[in-house]
Amino acid sequence: MIRTNLSTRPFYNERAVQVWLIALAVAVVAATVFNVTRVLRYSRSDTQLAGEATRDEAKAADLRQQATRLRATVDMRQIDLASSEARQANDLIDRRTFSWTELFNRYETTAPDDVRIIAVKPRVEPGRGFMIVTSVVARTFEDVLQFMDRLQATGAFTALRPVEEHFDDQGLLLSTLESGYVPAKSKTTPTPTPAPSAAEGAAKP
Image (cartoon, rainbow, N blue to C red; front, side):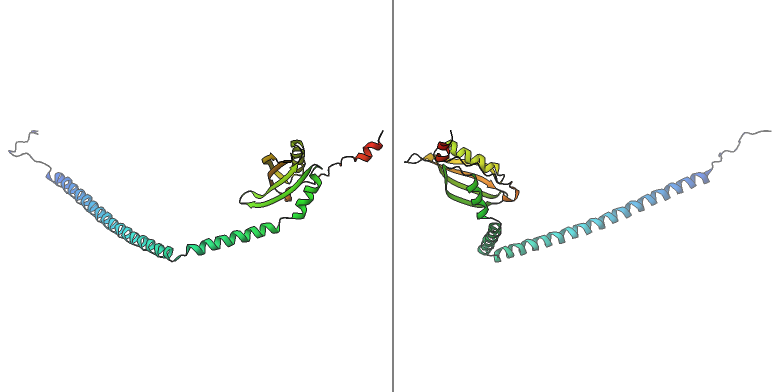
């Protein structure tokens, strides 16, 4: 049997080639359509976002103008007055919790015989509470130190320190003490032991 192809024009499978070309063309068209669709979608999204940004900027500019107009209508003197009244009200509330009787009772039971209190100036400081400035007259530094130790022992006086000390023309020590004052957290005020009188000392053998 002779199997040689003796035709002058060999046979090719043109149908398979056409199918592949058609499939490739369909794929190219589909990709093109997809890309065009995505481009149009992103373009619309960018346009929408640009419009929203423009509206937001216009709204922000309008709000800034409103804030400027409101600031122009605000009377700063009224604000300062209201702040001052609020501070005074808070100060009055704090002062209602301050007991002068309790403070002077502590002074009376802690002051040595040679220490005399000549001035007391309480004040309220934000974040620190009550502050007490106590001016005393004493004979020696030791008397003032003894007074400070007794005040601190009550637990009501914190961070006690002398801020000024000098002797006057009569040789007496003038000392100014500053401390925090927290009566709510204070301990029981100790009662110092009184010194024996001269008569009692003479009566003892």
